[in-house]
Length: 181
Image 1 (cartoon, rainbow, N blue to C red):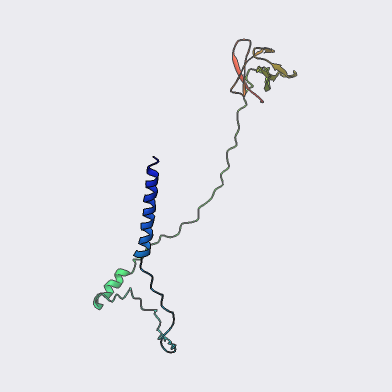
Image 2 (cartoon, rainbow, N blue to C red):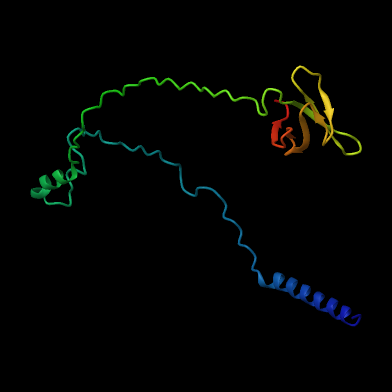
């Protein structure tokens, strides 16, 4: 590997020298730019005069096509004119009738689990990881319940989906009560 380094350097120097020689000998010098100026006498002002044109109310070049013989220009003129478009009479304005939106009336549902169902107020987790549910029976103060504890005739079974408390009644039927309602 050390023997190739001087050889590579020599080849690079030879390539650089060849490039410099080609630039020095191969590119012809640029000719000098011409000197700007005017070799003649004084400039003469020229004015262009436009002849006045007559009115063009009755002449339109596309109606009188110069490439069509004059005998056929009437047929050409008829062909170039658009056919009249039959427009239907305007419609009467639309009649706008206000619509009364229906009034939403939801049916009254009895509370789940009869009239003594617990009202679930919230829940908390203790430092040991256990769950406590804050529930209240009608006309009683709120109580913290652990899983399996009983509140009146209701037994707290589990917390489902993070916002639904599952209780069972004395017959073993399960009832689901949303938290905070």
